[in-house]
View 1: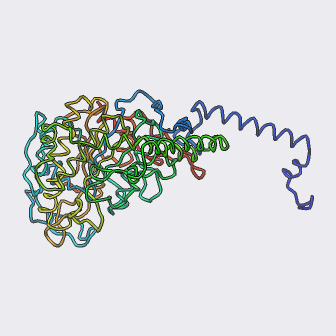
View 2: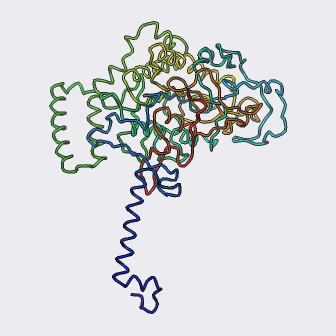
Length: 501
């Protein structure tokens, strides 16, 4: 105990019962006032739990039914979202970002070009490996590498001045898909399903369709739940690889299956009664119950045999390489999932089981003319067919399509003279469907496609805009974790209003 003579005047006052009660009363009153102001969103920006001045919004989730549909923050243009992700970094200067100066200065090294980039010494400026042509009524210049997507230019909204924080693939994938370069954070799809739930009770709210060749570099982190409840992680399967352990063993009859499920439901119900309000327990039970429903719903949605020939032809299922055919089947699966009301579908075009470098994804450090051509042959027609099919069926009216990659590629070649290195300072993605302008381009990179110069947008801005189109305020959607109100956009990001319809 501190001797009384060593106490400060404030310390002496606390020993006085009347002073102690007075100070306690003021403190409790101040806490109550802060809570009331917080609920009304009236706290100043200095509030540590709401630095934007807005109160956080955490959805009210029924532990017994975590997938139940929930209201958005405001009336949304889009009810579902399809994310087409191309791991490896697609070269914007060879696809959608036309730069005549690359042809003008081909073979030269203008001032300002760095001597060394991500993978070593830089070479000379290189003109696009494919010819650019005006497409559609908008006259958008798009290269012959992606002619089928080019035909749909009037439906797309391009963002040409995106930039990111990293030039490494794992961190780049993490940043685009989770808002952080580190692992352990919830993916975009997890945030959306946490906020909105699902309209479909027989299928997962969030499905990730992996490339026929396997997982991308960051693996399941790209569609994981991070610190959100486990119910909101993506369920990954593809047209040729159904979810594991769904098929009933041949020795196990349908009657046996039904009786087992009935017993489990009763046991789970009793267990949940003992631990009411345990969100993790409820999420696990809900996941197992959904898995039971998926035993019948998944085989049905994966069966594309009854799709008409015209649809298979549109997607390119019966032409080209085997990888293209498999990816085309994945695209049909994506459309069928959107049709069934799945909230978020993430479709991967590219994997990385052993380093990639243009063989399994878009990472083209050498022979870009061959490796990008191989990837585009797989991606172009099926992806264009998918978007066209959504449009033909009226699904684009309520569905947002996001085509994206983790960063771009340099306008100059590497020292080897055949590949383009990573470029985090300028790259292109596009949006289509609900809530976005058609036949529109926003932002510009410089004359070489090297750095973003106008309409410069961060990945935070990109994700904030997608959430906005789903009716979600990125500054308010949060989850309290380790003493912080966590967000997909961290403490950054602005909605890119110029692209909104």
